[in-house]
Length: 499
Image (tube, rainbow, N blue to C red; front, side):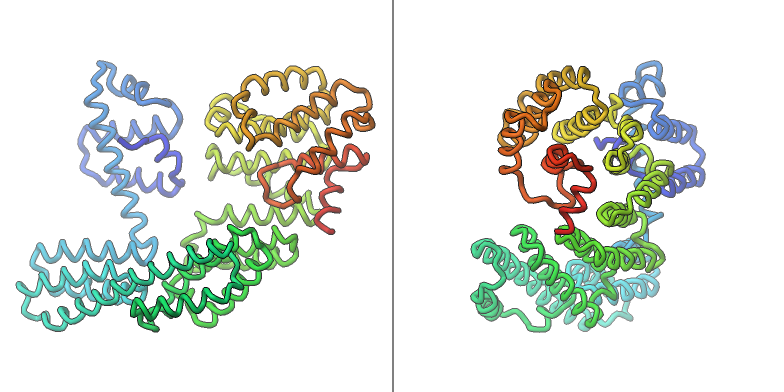
């Protein structure tokens, strides 16, 4: 059975409120009170396991009754989500229209059912949803035997045409798979002139209609395929040029008119690519365009992507020497209850605050910011990789605070707890960095000592090029470089991004 703790933790305030209203509108069975109790026990953190919930709700230890209740609560919750998000996107709208048309047809309200199915057909045609059109035409042709007003031959012809289109879309999928394969074989080199020729040949071989290739849905798929190929190659310069040119092309063709979510995703890709290319001023411009896109269409995608916008702002402020603005935004987010307690958001806010306070030489505030991430339940829920990297940030903060006795104990504990992980080649960098710190705390002037400097030189030579958005909240190489040169760590970062 599904995990109700995970499901409820991902609900928004609006979704939780909607569920409570749904329960109030439901028939007032005595069991309904139990459903609400079960939801509240999970939502408020009163209980954290099924066993605790079962004992709390059924002291007589009736586990079967508890699992029946749990199943019912999930059913009610999913029903309330379907009602709340009935018009979340066009596909959801079509699915709901199909459902209500079926109910009307069952009640012999054929005229109303047909009207709804025709509206669903119009939407599905506009979006090239050939799979949904198959269901729509099946419903209409089936209903024609009971409702004489339906022109059966007309819809049989439409059904046949849709079948051709559906087969065409499958051929397009083959084309896209070929494109991915060809790009892989050419080491993701878009200059491989043979690719275009081979695609044209395959299009002809598969008898793919030219207008199908030009459909918005297919154009978006091809664009994603090429973007992912360039990302795989880590050719961020070509990726930037391609994404921006493609955005302008698709806007001129009105491709995003019925695909607004795709436009939001493209903005996110462009912003992150500009960060990789150290173009922070340009990234700020596209970040504001992203915000405008989130406010459009009655803020349909605002809740899901607003945190992406916040991430873009924090990154923009940080690499543009505007740390105070970044801190102000993060402190506001930390105080908000909207996403408080959701691990991903807590990690983003707390870790970024700690890093920026470190850059501002406010070590006490950095430690206070990161402390909640070490709470037992929170820390246990992180992957081992995240735990290790979080502990390395803590090591750096304690080194800055000259807590050398604590560091000696802490490093020994980390080596013991993460022994298996640190043996893996993938974590050799973390292992070597910890080793350098372990050595450094034993010398009064470690960053002048030849033995320590030799270790740092070897570490730097094996380090990847500096890149915003890497997994290291504090860049190990630049932090060590700042120590050697007696410079501020943040100033070292700014000098690197301005090279």
